[in-house]
Length: 523
Image (cartoon, rainbow, N blue to C red):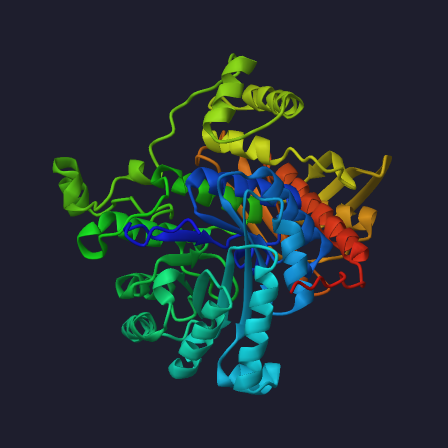
């Protein structure tokens, strides 16, 4: 176990690809997960929880692929405390340089009575046996007590002592439903640190949800109480109200060293880029006033603030935009830029593409440069994000609309489906509605649009329109995104992106095997 208890380092366990993906509309395909995992490694997180391998074949393959490619970072797979889950997690993370099995079981009385239907004694036996089973495969095993913050503390301490004896190298205390308050959670962690035998030899982690808006505050309180690791997500995404936000925790520790006297291994200059990449992949934007990464986080509109900033930045800024990677983006490329300059810029932005992918992106870059004068990093992000390694079922080939204040909007759309070009024309309440009606007529995918957002990249009339669309089909949400100088075209491509994600999801669903993996027992 690579943990020096004498170093004042707080480990960052990122669960964006697992817990964060459970946020409605945040589902990612394997390519998107891998792209984000690369950036998380570049950011400097200590552990990437890459997914829940038993959930689906797609999730298994994503965790396995990330484990095979991402080096020098721990790769964790989540597993319930049963043999099927644990073996499935092991089968995915075993390819990593630093594999971790993260197994969990609920410990609160309400979960024992209504969900697990187990006694306390039965739960301890199950937790210990499954910890030993996981330990038989991999040395690094984290044990989580689901709903820990609502668990009787004496019982929780007993559970922790038993799993430590069984070989757990990390203990995780989740505030699963975001119920705790900072003062309460501080005392909770303090008591566990003081009373659990052997806890000084393991990593003590916390995983705080944000149902009362206290995820970050509770995580920081836990650090003061002696926690060594924080489990969090980029932009705070996750189920319900989300998780503690990685960028908020890291910058609180960075700015307030006088209070916490702790550091992380995070490269803070990568925070904003990581936030933007997640936003682009999922289509879930952060609110403008979001701490650290929001559009207005470093904006000063009030005259008295502007005056102070001009005289001395520290009057109203406790950190600089540059510290989190928000330095002003200067124009770096244009239509006369060559492939070499474009390739170097891709590398500096953290994209690891092969020559074929670079060639495709460069062609799109040249096409965009002919349409708009200024090419910024955000434009390059949108170009690269549109490159897909997997074959897509639907490909938009043509869009034409007629609209205005005196005509009923009308659209003609052509889509390539499995090599066959199909055409349709439809009316609509607006140009985008007409386009979507045409797409639905061609594909037969009459999904419900539950989210639609348009914003401008760089906020000028020449800028690309960045469109995010979320569709719902049989209770599952799929989010697509696209950017184009024509927002109607961007809207069409975003919808097609949704349909391709839906197709991949359904295809993976069909491939899920009902057969349980053969359990392997070790004595």
